[in-house]
Length: 186
Image (cartoon, rainbow, N blue to C red; front, side, top):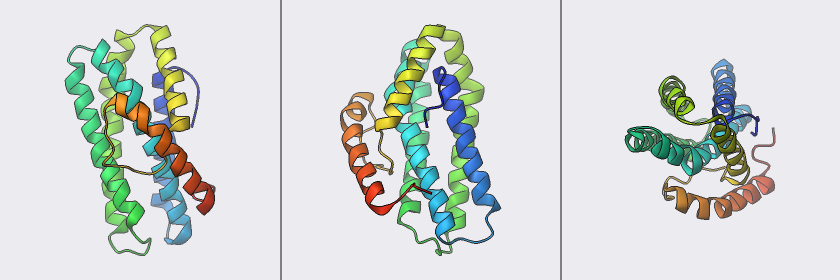
């Protein structure tokens, strides 16, 4: 978390980090606590990333890109599907026979979302915004990720204003729970 650079560099670094975690999951020959730990890492990263995008990236898309409302709405819908899958994974036992199927659904959803952002959305944003705007968005994204929740909250409002108001509180509670349980420390 917090790679540095403009918003596109920051988010693409997040994408590579999640892809690496997915590769670790796919390389595992057994489940157990090791799999739970990596699933928790993926969840933490994806939730923080999504919250930050919803707070700052998608409002910028709406403002700067022609047809931005439609694009932002599609990306937020993608996040909703991912968050539902993350919630399902959080509630599953690692030994559950459906775990690998649900993990594959998650990887497929995230891969499609990443491809869409990197091949379509990011080039449009790079063309529509100044270097300063992209750098400022990168700073805002990093700050948002540092305060964002670490667990999926699919019922939480996804409007930027509601997220900016509620996410820090949910993030504080999530981080406290993580500290007590040791989640995300491996």
